[in-house]
Image 1 (cartoon, rainbow, N blue to C red):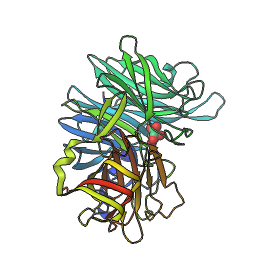
Image 2: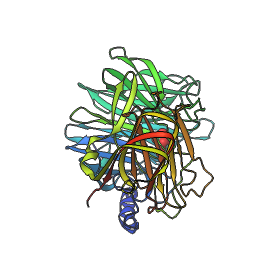
Image 3: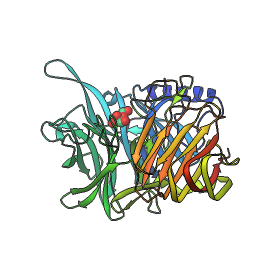
Amino acid sequence: MHEKKNSVALEKARTYEETYQNLIPKGQKPTFHVCAPIGWINDPNGFSIYKEEYHLFYQYYPYGTKWGPMHWGHSKTRDFIRWEQLPAALAPDSAYDIQGCFSGSAITHEGEHILMYTGVREEEQEDGSKLCCQIQCIAVGDGVNYEKLMCNPVIKSDLLPEGSSREDFRDPKIWREGDTFYAVIGSRSADNSGQIALFSSKDLKEWEFLKIIEQCNNKYGLMWECPDFFELDGKQVLLVSPQDMLAEGLEFHSGNCTMYLVGTYEKMGHHFLREEVAAIDYGLDFYAPQTLETSDGRRIMIAWMQSWDNHITPHEFAWSGMMTIPRELHIINGRLYQLPVRELEQYYHNTVSYEGVTVNGPLELGKVRGREIDMTIEVEEGYYSRFRIHVAGNDKYNSLISYNLDANTLTFDRNYSELRRDTLYKRKMYVRNQEGKIKLRVVMDKYSVEIFVNDGEQAMTSLIYTSLDADRIVFYGEGNVKFNIIKHDIVVEE
Ligand code: FRU
């Protein structure tokens, strides 16, 4: 039923990555975040459990640090922190995916690891012109090697409602309930904007279109990419990554954005009723999140920690792209909360803490520094107007996290982070007004700054490529700001 042995394209990618990833200078890559083995990566794919290990695949072009014909790269872990690199899993090597193996997802079924992905192929139109069409495909494997089904593609766009795009139909997220498989897939409706299509199957090969469960109606960007759909804390959650968003206050920024919709789901009629809509992350570098459910029932999300329009990888790097820290999700009062996986705590070293430090002007605390850290800063109340925290600093460079109490805004600013391109450097978000009380958890891993506000109520994720010896942290208060600070180094032994 499956095609035999690895294709020439896959063997070429595996040989290439094996040869060239060893040439990357030691210590250059992040310590506990998944990153490109070599070349380029984007979206997380196939985030799933197989034989008691968590597998993560990603959009991958090994041969350069820019996007190219998409392969699937592959890593696995037991604890979301210490990752093992595996050989590339898929290459664009079949007639139906020759232009690329685009994003998708995975599940385990009857001892096999099932990947569902989007194949891209050029099709000739009636008028002789060519169209890049997207279809859905399946590959089955053992955790290292995957074979594409002979019956691929398993879903074509002709199952979609009239007027739906054949070119924008991608990123299946698969799950199983009882004896039925379901998949939500991003699509573009006749009005040119995003819609999320729900399909079902009994055997993974024959699929039936059930319903459009959500629609953009040209309100939140255009095409909706990378859907994920799951139950959490008694609510139903839909994650999407809209393209061509128009900025809206401080909630959504222009371009490729991410958004969650929280609501209820009536399973029999497949009826999703949305109640809340908000951004998933307010930083500069966050896209295409995907989730899995652990065996102890936690919903974990990981995202591509880079942006399509502003990627700032230093040109001397032979790799580009990394993932966020995996985050535990919850719904509290209709909002999506996210915090780093608890497994991170097992890697805490050199913990230092300071209670009730009053800061008016600049203050540096000798031991509070580093580029691989998990640091929590709590301000209990305040007679102040603003505070700032400079991270990844030295005499020349720093990145700024600042809180303005009057405006209730938190800002991240990497203008002085050694950025050598004229690129986006600042983003701002509203936080809940608690009259000066605020809690920030800042996770850094060399080039990333992930900020979690008020126990995960909001997140702000951005990249900086400041030289690694810039590791100072300075606190500034305008007025009397009383900080509680606790900082852990993250040490992952080889
Ligand atoms: C999102 C995305 C997906 C697509 C993939 C291609 O970042 O555009 O919709 O499958 O990237 O690499």
